[in-house]
Image (cartoon, rainbow, N blue to C red):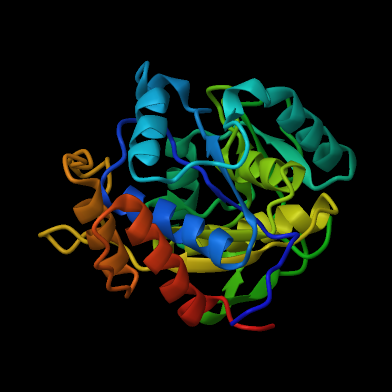
Length: 303
């Protein structure tokens, strides 16, 4: 059995674009189990920066769903929409140090630029920015702010990042060629996920991030921001995903239905099975107690 880690703080950070679905519960349960198995604390953060996509009341519904499953945070939840001044301060630090730059490009212009150069690249539906505005806007109006994805402020050296995922093992990504200069503040004025999540995780003292495997690709961008802002680097564990009948990840974007909580015990059992756990408790409390013990055997190993 692993010794408790009193400084362990984990979190679940849903976007309130609708109610939780079965895949969301897998991520929430995994992060809660990891925190409890390590004797740590578990927080909930509502990531509501993309306000046009967040229906009124979805945040309250998510918190109610978590409560019905016995997943209660150790502190009151926080909302990203209340923290925008912190993101502005983070962007200013990056701008002042020469790592953030203004960008005037539209998606159409980026596509055309990539096509003209013959080096078009797209990763998971996201264009790899070709660095058009690195040298300045030349009289154009800034649309967004981006982070320089090179190893040096002059943009001459490619940057590869390596990290160890607790489940996936050794990982690496060439940030320069596989991602490019990524957005920190969007053209519509909204803060980008990458900057916000890094600043929030650091301020809340998050030591361990447990989330779905689909977000593993975000880790290098977040690590780079942590490095440049002088923030601690948390440990990462990316969990298996719930797949739909079409073989795609279950998500709100592809029509995932809301989590059925008429029987929370059964819902927890199904979520645990995705994580490789077999639970047979007759109540939510029994399910969670069994889950912590099983998770401790799998993932809370001595370090």
